[in-house]
Image 1: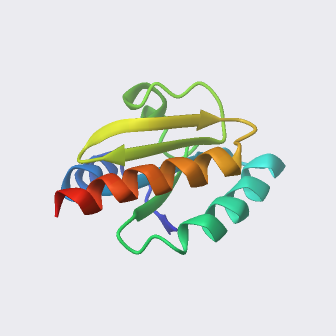
Image 2: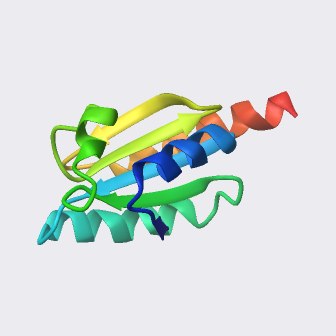
Length: 110
């Protein structure tokens, strides 16, 4: 998962990729680190998924741009629109279900 600490670049990546995920983390957050490892393990199977992570302390504007109130927060985008959001204790089974659902949806369009 690529670290991108530039809000405009993050927005551009979301707009320019059909399927994108943004993981927002906070400094010195043990839960953020643990969840990041779990999410990265899930996303390895989705080659069409553009994965990014950002550090909220480096890019504080990200909180207002994406209406984020807690860390970690995971946002999933399909064709530039947010289709799934999870925060704090992220249910990895639900994330996997969402990835499968939207991946199948995109494959039907092509």
